[in-house]
Amino acid sequence: MAKMHSRKRGTSGSKKPLHKTKPTWLRLKEKELEMLIVKLAKEGKSSSQIGLDLRDSYGVPDVKTLTGKRIQEIMAEKGITSKLPEDLVALMRRALNVRNHLDANKQDMPALRGMQLTDAKIKRLIKYYKATGKLPITFKYDPTQLKLYTQ
Image (cartoon, rainbow, N blue to C red):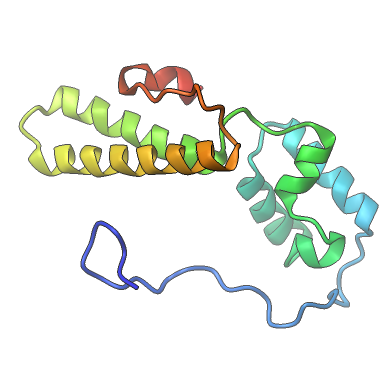
């Protein structure tokens, strides 16, 4: 299937481990892993950053195989989740960067199109999160208030 704002297919992405069994080299127990996730979350890291740290520093290939829960679910149980979903905040940061660039370079038309596409993605994502209940129905996206969302 083609990507939304380009005419290409795009097949890149990370791959899951082949076998859904606990690796033999891993010494962490389930409770230790949950405590480690909570510790990293309290340091201010997002769930994707925690996953990268666990993979690179601790050799944990997949948290769900070991605990039966995703990192986001573990963080929700402990009450450490943020108000806005992580992917939405990342898109808002991108939109803020593009807007700052456009303030300095008003004639940059490709950047203007990039901003329009990013705003469209944000609006679609907000619509989805309102439908699934992850955002309140009264949530409004205001492009002029992006700095408040991304802090």
